[in-house]
Image (cartoon, rainbow, N blue to C red; front, side, top):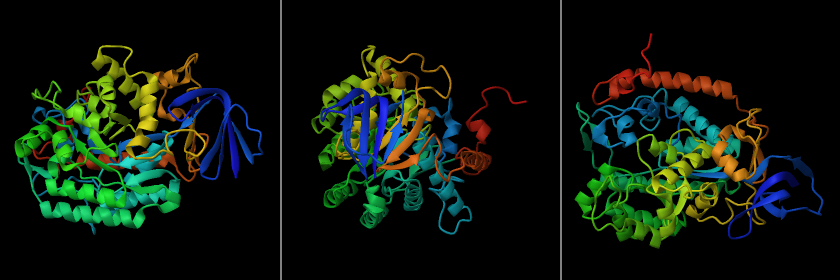
Length: 494
């Protein structure tokens, strides 16, 4: 079937970069785009008239931790200073001998709530991404049960995903004062890698190639050198990208320097992992960051030399009083910047806006991190990190992953007059403005509606799950705190 989309604004691609096409058309047939230009002379089976809307490539979210993330809501405006702003240590590290209640990552086969929790969390993840115009996402290292649940939702809703069970050489627990203790398990790390390889070998290319694999040693400080080397070996063997959290935490940085006598980025370079298809989660706390005061820094030089990718998660790290320092410096060094949502909201427009604003603030220059560059990061940057030349662009031969954005702002005046649609999108847009989503040439969402999905019910179910998680925080929190003690109310509760 051949479909033509007509629109006032189209983000086309000239083979080198995005270009703006005014009053043009995009034509796709089957899974691929066959024409982008002013007018198409051939026959089509269907025409979508997008009017004054924007037609552009679907967004690529390169850093997704799946689930509704109810536990993360506990650390807005809150936290323990001894973790230096690292969020997951606040809400993912249980008291020794306990597990984090309600989190599917900690549930075991046979637990009564496992299946329901997996289904709800995976459904919420894929639905939120799809509703916000994300056509491809990278899940950043959850367990195999979570990956399998996500696989089912990807199959159901038609999105594109890079999946692979994460693995490490041991997690943390906390004592009664919240002091961290890591339970080391090098053998378990290698077994986790084996599980990931088997998962990828079994599921690579499923659902018309919408499922691809990725190897994710979760964090550089929780991975042995042997585990990192074996990851590289299998990435080359399977021809898949890699991802890991690195240069993302003050504690991680000092742990790696203490154990290996080199920085996290130097360690990745030492084992040979630095490359464009290595997605470095965050990568904002490199050696010369002011929070680290590490002399003789060469992290950025190494990352740029190998054109490494970072998944920059601007909203997530800004909540923890951090940012990328700075956007222009990373780009000038040769680093490929992609954008991820990490936890919430999974709204690429809000994340692009935050990346642009923080890029200007950290660079002390309003020319920095302009709208075009952050839009490129949300599309082409993600595609580069995955080694894909057929994603993130609207051009003949590319896959038909397309979104249509409604500039009416849901019948509001939010956008005002529009001169440059990309500047308007980054300045004023929100994910709800996405009207239509097409993946692999199939319409997955139209007029803001996802077939077979009741968003109101999903919201209600998620609220109930969140209430359950918050009610049981005291059972596993290392310091025995209630949810209200972890996250005090904004105003006195009456």
